[in-house]
Amino acid sequence: MDYIIETHDISKKYGDFTAVDSINLKVPRNSVYGVLGPNGAGKTTLISMLCTILHPTSGNATVNGYDVMKDSKEVRKSIGVVFQSRALDDILTGREHLEMHAALYGVPNSLRKQRIEEVLDLIALGEKADEFTKTYSGGMKRRLEIGRGLVHHPKVLFLDEPTLGLDPQTRESIWEYIQKLNQQEDITVLMSTHYMDEADKLCDEIAIINKGHIIKSDSPKNLKHELKADIITMKVDDQEKFLTEVKKLDFIKNIMVVDSDIKMMVEGGENLVATLVNFANKNNIMVKSIELDHPNLEDVFINYTGKRIVEGG
Image (cartoon, rainbow, N blue to C red; front, side, top):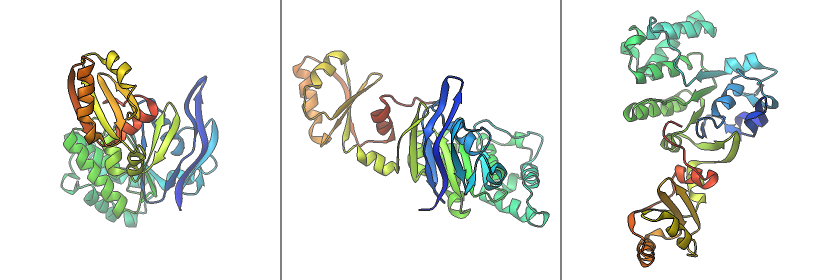
């Protein structure tokens, strides 16, 4: 397989603190690859090293065939970057932002106008191109930032938390544009996110990162299938007693406690809901609620880390 990004035991330390610890990644060309984890897990540090903004403490990486340390200029020519924090000038128009970025990246004058029109069409900002960005909505600003990262025809686009702080409807709109540019621009997208639904919806493959380590990587489908279980989630009035008793049941494959939820991995869950309710009643434990579902990425994350990613990271 053709990999456009490869890392080899790449690490970043700040004194005694290790932000990224011996990470190995292989990102297939023209894929959408997600790095999934909570805030502080090392996602932004990893992307910053791949973008040549930070130097690794140890290990190495290549992007589009170029070494991030030895060939940093070539790496930068090959990539576009959209960071978490907004970086737009309110007194410039959308078109002026794209023109400035095209000039900085050396897009030839003969191609610049046509390329800017292509990008404006891709991000659906043609009608707003000559308005000041201070009049743009949050979603429009994010689309412009993505467009700015595309104007020089990069091979890789890095998106660091691309929908952070956006409302659900706008997030789904951004998802559509990410899928569109991946298909139409022949571009590899590497994105970091702490949103499970975002990773599940967009990514061909994800790497779960926690405390600087990649703890599992595969396609979302395979990661969920690998659990080979249904998830029964219960709330009870005496959690401690229920946990003590339920662990004696041999059909419980794994138990995870998340806040007031007791999550149990079982096979054939539809046949066990009534069994668990009856079991609780026999032990004088009141069941407040019970739900049956198939594993999602949050269940995968909890299975490997023992905790969930809370909203906001």
